[in-house]
Image (cartoon, rainbow, N blue to C red; front, side, top):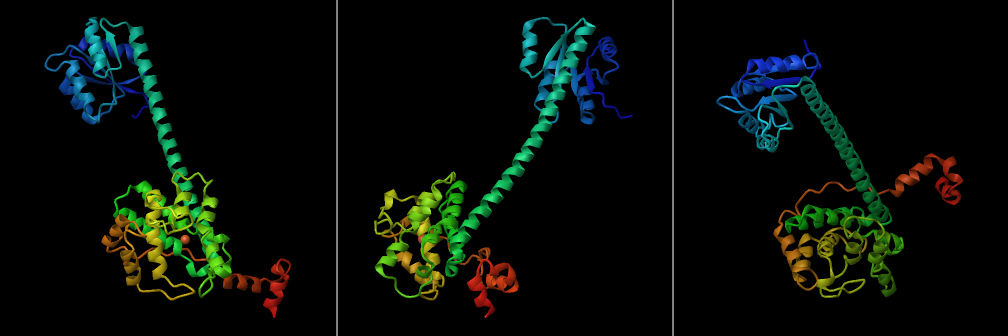
Length: 375
Ligand SMILES: [Fe+2]
C-alpha cells in the first residue's frame, strides 16, 4: 500500500541496533534495512529513501566509505545521511560532516534525541523540496515573462520601423533588409551574439529619423536642391534624438547617429573619422549602401548587385572600414540568402477602401476627403 510517510534506510551490521532504531522511530516512517554497504547499494538501486542512518564501524566497507560513494553518485548525493557512531571522538564526527553527512547520532541511543534529530532533518528536507519546487515555478514564470517582454520589445521595434517606412513606401522593408545584411556581416566577423543583437535592433531603426523629413522629399524623383539635401542629412540626428532616452542595453541611438559617417571624415552629420565611429555603425554603413544600391528608388531603378559590390570594393579603406568590407565580401552567401518577408507597410489603397466602405464613419473626420471619395 502506498503511503506518504518518509522512508529511512538504516545501515548497520548489528541487528540489535537496527531493531532499536526501528522501535524508536516506528509509526512515523517507513524503513529499509541493510546490514552492510553492499546491501545498502542494492537497496538504493530500487528505492530512494529520504534519509539514511549510517553506521560508521562496519566490516568490509565502513560508513565513511559508503558515504563517499553515495556523495559522488548523482543519483544518491541528495539523500541526507546521519552517521550512527559509538565514537565520541570529535575527529570522526568532523570527518563525517566533511564527507557530507548532515548530523550524527551516538550509541547508546537516547530515544528522544534520535526522534528529534531525525524529525528535524526530515522537516529541513521538506522545506528544501518546497523551496526547490517554488524556485522551479518562479524560474518558469520569469522565463515566460521574459519571452513575453522580448516579443513585445521586438514588436515595438518593428512598429517603430514601420512608422518611418509607412511615409516612404519606396523604402518599405529597407530597414529590415539592412538589419539582416548587417547581422550577417557581424556574424561573419565573429562578433558576440549580444553585439549582433544590438546591430539587429539598430538596423531596424537606423532610418527612423526620416519621419521628420517631408514625404515630398523622400519620394521625389530627380536631383535634390542643396537645402533639401541638408534636410535629408538631418535624419541621423533626428533618429538619435528619438532613441537616446530609451534605455536599450546597447548604444542604439549612437549607432543610428553614426550610420552615415565615413571613415575618411566625408560622411554626415558630424564628419567623424574612423577611430570615432562605432564598429556597429561601420557595419551599418556597408549594409545600408549595399541594400540601397540594389533596391528600387523613385529617382532610379534597382542597380545590379555588382554595382553595389564595386562601390564598396572601390571605397574600401577610404569610405568603408576595411575589415567590415572584407568580411562582407568573404561571406559569399550573404547576398544570395532568402531573407524573411518584411512586414507589409500600411497601404493607402486599403485606407481609402476602408473609408469608401464606411462613409458615415469617416465623413465627420475627413469631410473634404470623404466628399472627394464619393465623387
Ligand atoms: Fe539613413
